Length: 201
Image (cartoon, rainbow, N blue to C red):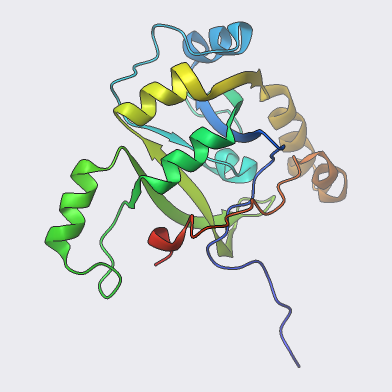
């Protein structure tokens, strides 16, 4: 019997419009609440540090424990410009060396030092936060990319902690049928013009 065909192993799935794409992060209230209130990151948000954004709501839930992990109690949905998102992807390097994909480890290390952004492909998650066969994009932003993210690309910031808690309550009660429709819709993100060619190992 033929196996059902699932999503491609390396595919960006994200809530997006013609001009924006939504990514998720989780912070302590001292960062998350002012960011949601003001629609941008406060001065306390360190622009000189690597920050990771995730287009997958469920991968964010896996990472932050549905907003229950210490320092990750406020879950943010950050709408950024597609132009900025794609700039970060075009200028990204894979976060790990892949034999046969990179020419050699030394050249990969050189790329990693120079790149303002990096990509990891981690197993996507289901409602029970179990790993799935296909991958979810994690996009790390440093230096110029982090500054642009905070000060140029961010269009809106929303606190989605109540949504995370609502879905988590239903999951704990075993009512996955009620929880599933509450998840943000994340259709495939268009990646024309070889946007991910250098990132699909």
